[in-house]
Length: 271
Ligand SMILES: [Zn+2]
Image (cartoon, rainbow, N blue to C red; front, side):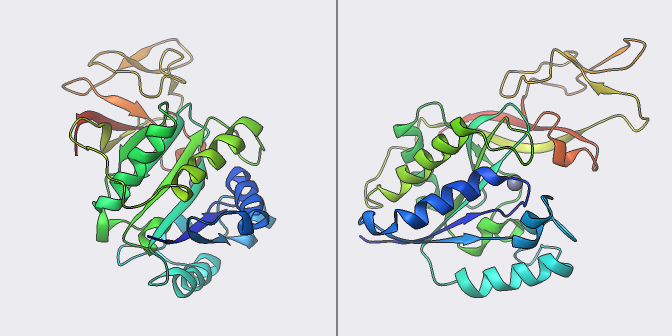
């Protein structure tokens, strides 16, 4: 079955890895015969300014729960008219400053979404599958434009930096979907994934930093009492959860303003 796939880069203007991939895919378009696809540069103004966004986060500007403002209100309306209802599947390409490696984020409970995530993992076993906190109609992300689709999130890379390894790996993840027969089905019963359930915040008072033992330890188990924060007097605050979790987005640059230290998840087997 030939699918129509929308591929988005530059939802965040300071994440050029995905933009390199869509530029390359545009050039290679004729060579791909399995599916039809179109590439979209999501936020040209933010890219020009090398910023995550101009007025408000475009990746929170979709769906009924989205917040739209200024430049991103315009971009959200444009992408909605160009993409919504016109494609079968969507891929939105992102990077993170956190040490997450290769991940796919699911924000809907569509069967195709899960199958595509597993397809990517079959080709690239190092890819981790994350299920988001805000699913389906609650999801304000760009991927909400279509009922089936994935956010690809890779790191670590600093904002505005072109990292060749991540560019090539992102391209490979996209190709795993573009070359997939969407009628192939994988057994989802034993698939390991990470179910997000909350954000862990920095202490209210300033002067607390992510503890060096936690820094870069995305997807390593964190137990109650394990060090999370340290201050200049080398006082340490431990993890205050009541059971072990798997953290990611540890110390992500974009989440500093909201004082978010990490996202918490639990390992699940099977969908
Ligand atoms: Zn992003």
